[in-house]
Image 1 (cartoon, rainbow, N blue to C red):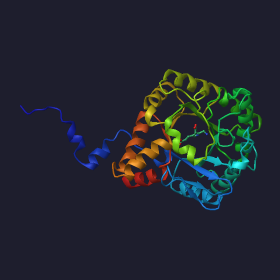
Image 2 (spheres, protein in one colour):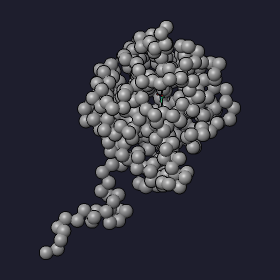
Image 3 (tube, rainbow, N blue to C red):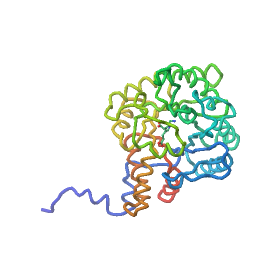
Image 4 (cartoon, rainbow, N blue to C red):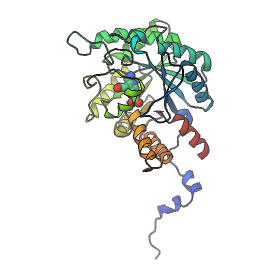
Length: 329
Ligand code: PBG
């Protein structure tokens, strides 16, 4: 009697067989590249904690978005970094049509049109002098409803500047609903909402704070979710879907694969995940030390996020991953 009767190793024997039976495939069109554009910059500036990622000038951003479109990347998510003197208590540069993010959206939309999906982060933290995602009440807490009024204006400003998708990311209660109503009232019924629905108060945002030169003192634990909670994420997602979210996102990705999986199982809207700055930085740092193989770790993490149920992934590796995927398939 030959033993064993069942030999799973047969389907792992060659690269061609392994490729044939792969259950999860990634495509460049499912990747979104987050990008930073800084006011007043004359040369792109590297971000030390995020190797290969830069703060763009308006000009270098335009060119990089064209390259992303040509590479078949699904979309770009733009973050504005205002000059320090453009920040104020209420983040008014986020609403100003001439503010860095709105100006950059205009540049980019004029350049690429609908060749890739142009998205904008809809949040105040880059624009406020205190670095919080909303405006502060007299007692120093973040005032939910006063913030909503600003988000509504900001959504319209971003749509007017050419965003095809806006991404409310401040974790204020009701943020998706006010953005949807404001967009509709202003005639932007076709601008979609990618809701940062389940966004956790994560230690992995560290490098992003450098990327946007965050002024934050303290933390975001009164509005972002507490890491131990899964059921709470489903409630957040349900609210956002009810309020009109077209796509829902879980963020960060790798420490929350169970949340991605649960959201995917429970809702019928597209699910996105954000592989955030700290997830990127830890792989890059380990690879720079020769401790892990960067390209394999890159595709392994992205594949795990896809396998968990995210069909759209925001990743700083979007361009590199697209090149690796083109070589593979
Ligand atoms: C809020 C926002 C943040 C990130 C994306 N949108 C920062 C935060 O919530 O503290 C983080 C992204 C990353 O770490 O890559 N505007």
